[in-house]
Structures are given as structure tokens and as C-alpha cells.
Length: 135
Image 1 (tube, rainbow, N blue to C red):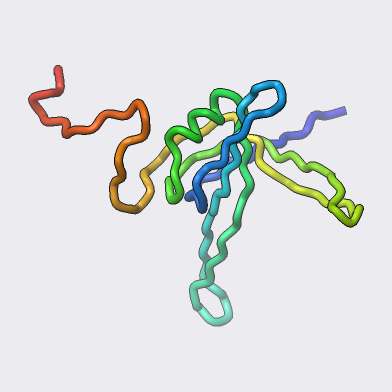
Image 2 (cartoon, helix red, strand yellow):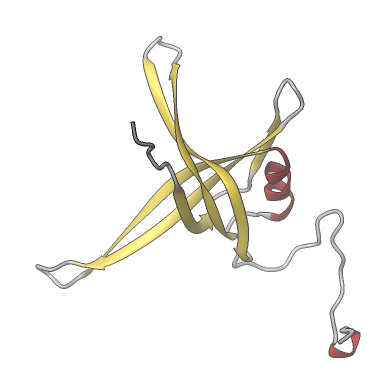
């Protein structure tokens, strides 16, 4: 029996502020809503077509804490992980499915395109001048 590959790589922008919660055992879980965009030229009309896909991304433990601390709506982020599908029943008893990316790698690629805000806890304010750099 051969093994399969379940690997997802995404680069996109957050559509909302990350949502962090704690499990009953005290572990942190953060959920992201990540938009990826693609464009192509229609062969028949030569018009540019565009499509946006929304991805539910889930991060656990330390990665969840880092995402909650540093990511904001609009941040550009690199995510690597695996697809997971969960089956559940809604209020009417009908089976529903949710597919999400369980991340095991995350990298902030760029800030959100908006005005600067006051720093979050643990961040410093100020300007770094050339003479402040020790090399």
C-alpha cells in the first residue's frame, strides 16, 4: 500500500481578525479566514477573469498564539498544512461537512494595507535610525 500526500500551501490575505479560543484542556486554537486570488485570460473573449477562494485555517498551541498576537485583518500570510474534513450534525439533525486547513507552518509576509495603529502589548514604539544599528 502506498502513502498519499496531503499538503496545502497558501499565500493570501486575512479577511478578518484572527479568532482565538481555548479548549477544555487549556490548549489554544486560532481560526483564520484567508483569501487567495487567481486571475486568467478568457480564451474566447480575451477578458481578464478573476476568482477569490476563501479558506478556513486552524492553528494550534504556540502557532495559534503567534497568529493571534501578530496577525490582523488584511495581513498577507504564508500557510502550509494539511486538509481535514469534519462531519457534524446541524440543529435539524442533518449531516454537514467542514473542510479546513490545519496549519503546521505560518509566516507573516506583509502588513495589512491600512494606517498604523498603536502597538499591541509587548511591541515597542519608535523609529530606528541608521546610527542605532550596531553594524
